[in-house]
Length: 556
Ligand SMILES: [Ca+2]
Ligand SMILES: [Ca+2]
Ligand SMILES: [Ca+2]
Image (cartoon, rainbow, N blue to C red):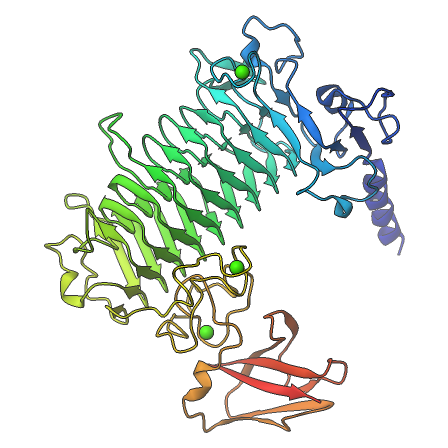
């Protein structure tokens, strides 16, 4: 017992030691330690510098410009070194109106908190700062920082020599908006736009463990590689972002991931990015939506549409490495070699994807959805994908051979809900009405294989029965139940208190979902207590040793 109390004490101590400090650009009554809105500082860097490990900095709406270089000098010899320099172990949040008492009270849409790199003449780019936000820890295992709820704009990383910060080389050619080195960092809920540099136009991270989630990253430029996001080395999770209209002259219009270990790129919408604009070096590749190089990458549940490359891989370009490409919808991307997907060395498992409407060159000739390098082909394993062209087009001679892997579907319309309206009637991506979700009679429904399949889809909706191909799972689908199932029964239905499952197979897992796809309970029992459920229709997913069965039932 004593030990437990001791641990609780330590835990409480850590929680209590975290202080919130406040920043409001309009505050005239600021005083250290800035621990209330009434005493909020108007100098964001000053409040960051006052913070200790575990502290949070809350920033009210307004426009903030960096005022010092990373060493705290307000008049550096190159004024473009001015930046918001984050301290290890702190979290910085934007999106407040200046009265909130809880993070969940924020309204990010109305309280725009802009970190602007537009130094010197407003509207003139080439006197802007090299990095709007900078974090450089001296070791990979540093605590790291969180940056959440900001708009970040007008960084311009085109300079000459490198800077040296905390023992790290910080390139003045990379990361004009966000440049992070080392640590366990989170970059979430930001809008990152109109930044440009040689590389990493929207986000540049080097090493560490980085979570990049729920950001909108758009209209950024790289004069070299990686216009939207660059993650270099480390282990990175890039999830739930909307990455669009970024342009790289070289490789990686949307995402450029190099030498990462166990990177996860999931549930992103990656649209209308461009790469391979012109030949900037002898390595003339592409990768309009995603470019990965070496390492290991899981690319799962993404929607990639209308990305282009003037060379290889309009949607995805994988160069070397061990990769899994699972349950993506790869739609109307354009490349001159491999409109949807291009591979070059390495090995790739490609499962449960929909390739549709991609273009190779000027039409849907062989290579529209996939091409392998002719001299240095990757080892690719294709399972349960939908391809748009006739099977006979997928040949070694066309450099798009599927190497005899079975269970792919050819030349069959995937049955999208409304291709002309990808956002759907609500104007929001990743919701139930999205245009590239599936119709109930789609061939993609339940067509995917289970091994490596995610448990939910791009919207977080649970996958039912066998996974559908593509990023969208048909909500509440009962496709599996159309097959005759003689050894499976649920009763009574409707049920009030107990629902019974009868099967000859051993039950491994039972899940109950509501019609929105939210998981209500998980069990291994054949008798399920549903007495506390609200009346309505539910979906039962039963995994046995031999199969997964999905059934609807009604709670009275
Ligand atoms: Ca300027
Ligand atoms: Ca929608
Ligand atoms: Ca399914």
